[in-house]
Amino acid sequence: MIHVVTPENRHRYTNAMEQAFRLRHQVFVEEKGWTALARPDGREIDAFDDDHALHMLAIQEACVVGYQRMLPTTRPYLLTEVLPDLCEVEPPRSPRVWEWTRYAVARGHRDRGRILSPVGSALLTGIVEWGLESGVEAIVIEMNPLWLLRLVQLHFRVTPLGLPQPISGEDTVAVSAAFDHRTLKRLRETRGAQESVLVARPAGPRRLAS
Amino acid sequence: MDSQRLSLSSIGAGMLPRLVDLTYDLFRSFDRAPTAEALNACLLQAVARIGVESTFAGVIPLPGLPRARQAAHVLIDSTPPGWTEHYFKVGHLERDPTIRRLTSEATPFLWSEIEPLYRADPAARRVMEEAGDFRLRQGFTVPLITLDGRVAGFSFGAERLDASPEVRGMLHLLAAYAFGRSIVLSEGPKRQPVRLTPREREALQWAAAGKTEWEIGEAMAISEHGAEKHLRSVHRKLGAASRTHAVAEALRRGLIT
Image 1 (cartoon, each protein chain N blue to C red):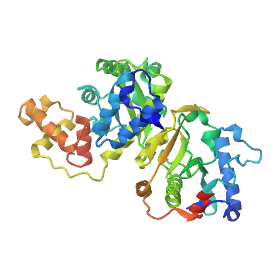
Image 2: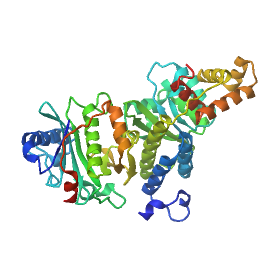
Image 3: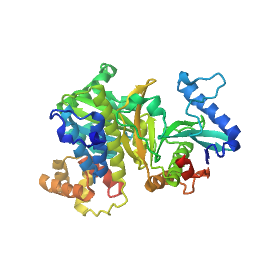
Image 4: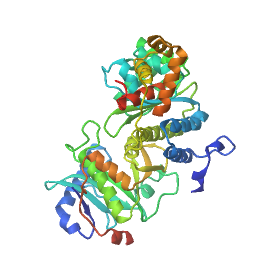
């Protein structure tokens, strides 16, 4: 199940957020080698982990097995501040568009073979459910172009924001991906489950107004 | 975002549109395409400027699949007539160095870049040389992975290909998007049930076995022209973009075995 963590409910997720920052360190620093993010305490935390960030945690039996962070595009975000070269058009800035960052699935819960893992598809479904409830229509993604085919098959309407470029040795492309109820339907078909993946829901409109 | 409204026809007419804008326009054209065939036509028209003459894409068959069934994995095929039939009939799939490369590494490549990998392999060299005889002298292949984890490939073929880093980036995105939309179109819900006549089914069954129109005519004791007529009708009924696409579609629908 996917838990949405915001400043309003953060106090209930102290331990889980600790695990989430460690999972991020494990995946992005130790596995992907993004050494600039390394921290001696083994928790990957950056300047964007402020009160405007929204964290989504996949929790199984009190363990954080998946994570992703959503950032509003109405404020400075990764694409505009850290990876501006990937964006050749005017970067999206809208309360209806959020940036999807730090997608991470714990080892042992990864894609079996190359299939989108159950945890991965639950996280993606979490974004779409949350978005449809909160008036969010699209996400900005900096990703390996291999994701593009999956997104199209899942009925995301993708807009390129630039052409692929190598970032830390890996081809990376910035896109915005719009979704609607058909995307959710497709994700649920793919997961073979109809019920919502979200457990804790913040008051969406209030967050967007801030 | 007026820059995103540039039309494809303005390429080469003085000011060049940026490739990212061209890519955007093509994504939206792909969204509107009613069939995989229409989508591919739109793609070919746009990339003709950089030398691309044909496209070929499909899921890679698992090793050991009989040759007659391999062609059913083709989703998009606009290679010159005769090439695909020949390719599967003589078993090139197992020797094709581009297939070997794309199943081992997920980054796109120019065919010229993998020449060192097969220089010492006469069978692989023969595949590439024969491809050259079909105006597939140069090419660019994009490895893909479908939602259900199958490895697929999308190739652009040319006599001479302009392959600057920007063009490669654009082809990379176009391949993934075109392939995804073609899959979505092929599994569309508004698909009408298709009925083939016994003769059409028979002709298609022979085509699935790799027979030429002349051979099908012989087998069915009709003229080559008669065989062609049956197959054309099958293409129309199935909305197929090519012979291989028709066979694939008929297998998927259980019309032939």
